[in-house]
Image 1 (tube, rainbow, N blue to C red):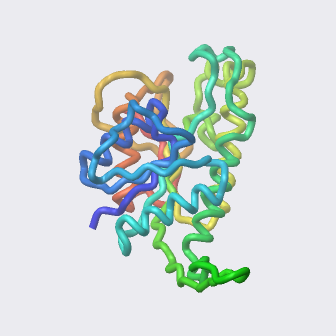
Image 2: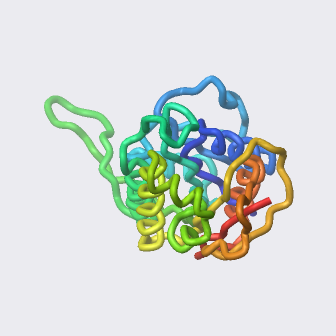
Amino acid sequence: MLPQILLIGATGRTGSLVLSEALTRGHSVTILLRKPNSNLPQDHANLTTVTGDPCDASDVEKALRSCSSTRPNVPVVIISTLGQTRTSGNPWAATTSPARFMDTSAKAVLAAAAAAASSEAVKTKTGSTGSSSGSSRVQVHPIEIVKFVVMSMFGVGDSFANLNFALRWTFNHSNMDQTLEDQTLVDQTVRNGNLPYVLVRPVILNEGEAAPVKVYASSAEGVGFMPKISVKSVAKFLVDAASKGDWDGTAPVIVN
């Protein structure tokens, strides 16, 4: 049975490709969006859109509950492709995301997952008579959340030592330091969280076609001086990580 996917970051460069890939493979996908986006599929039978903030645990839980109501008893995998943004691709361009945006979202996901995985009685209003309101308790059943797949980056944790000297200097002396700091916090948060995880570390991204992927250990030992991978290849790998257990509990570095 294919797991259903809760996708956070569906409007981004990688997220939109993950959405397309997951739907093509037959996954049921729920996306959490701050506001409607006309560039995404509007009437796909396997797509559900929930409006909310990925940094708000109650909104993430609402999206998880939507997965359960759409396809009850089908396990859920959460994929996040959120990233820090800047005014352009230039490493020195001004940042447009809060300093700990991704880590705040990761914490919200873990809190929401813990709440959604529990079974509890919820009080709901059923009507009113005179000045008194009627209410009843509805049992909310736990949701099976298989894992949390996160798009991390080459340079996080033990892979930093295997960046070439130019990339290390750029991370340390440009606005990319905010991205690296945030991704490092995400790595720590997810590892210490309550869900199985895959922390995918793509190398330098390009806009090429999808191609075979080689997987290295988290340290990125042996990836080469300027390793690259296409965004399309990353999207396919993220969906692979959602449906396979090959990389659970690891931080694979991926390269074409």
